[in-house]
Length: 500
Image (cartoon, rainbow, N blue to C red; front, side, top):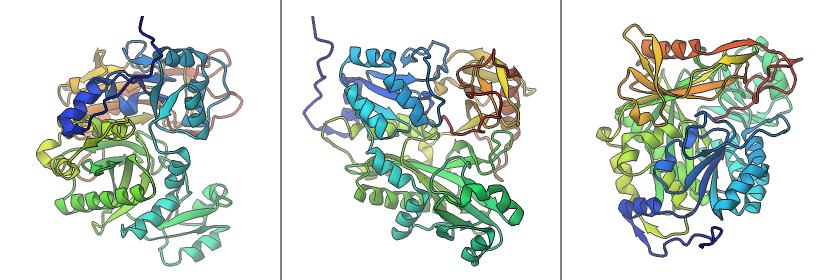
């Protein structure tokens, strides 16, 4: 009988072009895992890569996903980050038994730290990402700004310094105008981005700014949010088309400036802005390569509504919440998803690739179809235990804007029209909801905003419809679920970390 723990042997010949690379992944014998809170970020990866499995904390699919492993709940300290969730999973005996039964393999994470790297090594898993120390360094918003400015990439006018008082802030930002945006070095989705126009605003956020070390103080502009995902490979940087970002909509998130969705469609913005964003992404990719970074990254750009000038906002050196949009769009499915170019760098195989040709093809409007996603959070300042939750699957909207569950599914390409959407549930029955808690993600064909970057009528109907299928009761010690805070005596930390 064949030894199940024998390390797979990969091809030693050079792969030439996309056809060879796709076939290589179809015939892959190495166990590969995406380990995270949910599998949404790389949903569908298992359809492209043989022996690709998900190990997750939350089962968004109620046991029906064929390649998802969710271990039984065991006692653990309260999670403070996705890294905590991943480390809990890697230390779980059921996960260890599952991984070891399949032999040495490779692992992808949304977020990880040095402890994650150590635990993965103990399970004979190679982490298919740059070192955690390098990613942490590059994740610093101040470092991103310095790298970008050195590369000639425009950033919103700013100063970077430690701030000790409101008077200190005004002195440092004297040339930036009365309305400011202050960001700490690390943070996401608006949690550590503060809008300050007067002393009252300062008083609200001072505790989070003073003592945080150097912060980034920016002139406040009226931005349109955009995102571009890309991948640094040994042959150059592959750049996906520009996406719009949904930011700060109170129907979706309680956080001013918080990310809450994306759209991708042909001819987003004008050709000049698209070219500027692509050129800046290529330049940043070259900077990352010189830093020793290979793989997936995402850039947030801000377009000033008053001047149409494009600025770099921030960088995420990782797979992101927008990755599902990028990896399922027509340009990706025609060649192969962007995450596979990332994974290829860790597959112990030589390959050749015409990166310039891929970038040219992916920039053509005919290769970009139209999709949008909404990330729904609980927005009310209230705590409860969920007693009813909409299931994952395809939902349908009728002519009156009312929605109903149509059928179970895991793939967004089975959404047939703008009257259908794939909803992926995150919070389920028995879980807490509280201000900032992730409820789920809805993906549909077509746009979700109008040209003024406001939610359109269809988006609002989807939001209202899905949220109407959630119900909750008052929290008590008897009905808390696995996403509950550790104590009911105080309001949980609102959205202390995001799951996507």
